[in-house]
Image: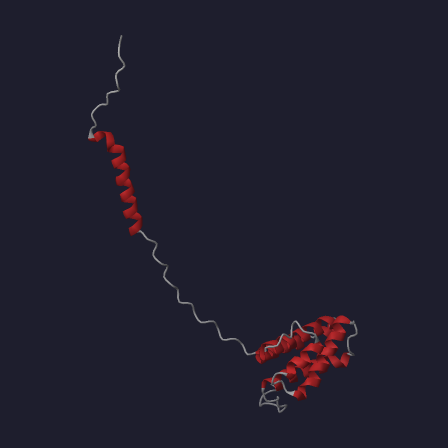
Length: 178
């Protein structure tokens, strides 16, 4: 009877391992390639410095002048006029005195301003303008026609006086009537 013989292996040759050698060479090549091709940091673009912020009083005065030119109360838009007037004043107070004027009620703003260097002599005028604005916006009780420009003027005075600007002179400049 035949006896079972063990499997005989053929002698190994270097060509038996060439796929492993090729894979190793490719791996080494890829490692070298990607190490050399490290992403270069993007050149840092030097950002121009931000433009200087417009002082709060200048911005408020520009907005008040624009509001005065529009004269929304002449078109029956008194509620929009007082909403804009109140927003301009509150934004000015918030930027100038660092108080949360936009999130505060008129009653809350006055005590907040007392803790700052806001001139006490302007408190009554500011309170009157904000109160009239609240009445026009929320109670649908706009002031009489002649009070619109007065309130605009009072708002301008509050901004100018609290910012330290000299009051405007009413002397005509040469050639002003040309």
